[in-house]
Length: 229
Image (tube, rainbow, N blue to C red; front, top):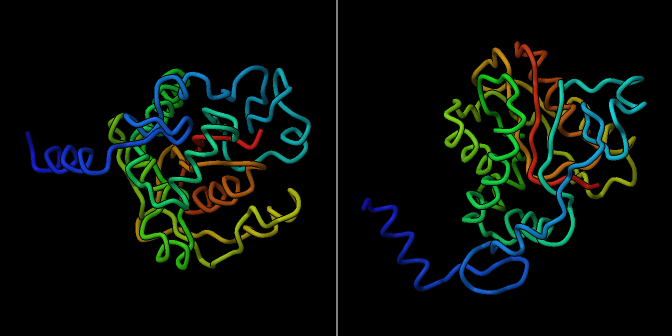
């Protein structure tokens, strides 16, 4: 047993995990809450994953996003929403492996041809305040499980922007993150799997993917834990 495992078990004794859904002790998301969380499946646009479409939605036909396709595990309600908020704002960074597990299951079934895992970068001020990037934690777990390289240095924010949740509509969200990202210390190449915790309109994923493609990536696929609908 290594030091990290011993330390983790010691912390569990002092601060036992508690389900973000039902609040029962034992796991950050218990099996029941994980099973009952509404899945983002069914008939959806094959590109942006908007519900209610058997093939591609009209928006993707008229204004194709920069990414090739995206998938999300859950809809952003109930336990899934509680998990995102706990990871993002509650400081419960230990939630990341639990949240990444169903993302890995979706990735395994989906099986896009990708060469590296890249997280959507967090703004400097929010990153310093939070102490970590929730997208990076999830991406690291996905990379570890899939065996793909974890490349957090491929993408960075070129400017801090107001939170997307503060924007009134899809147009405002696209405008808010336009040109917000640029290539980091390492130039991307090949096909990238872009990771974030939650997406709503896909504006952040689109802007991130556009920067990666401009920087040398061949294709960009996206995977998030939850979707706004």
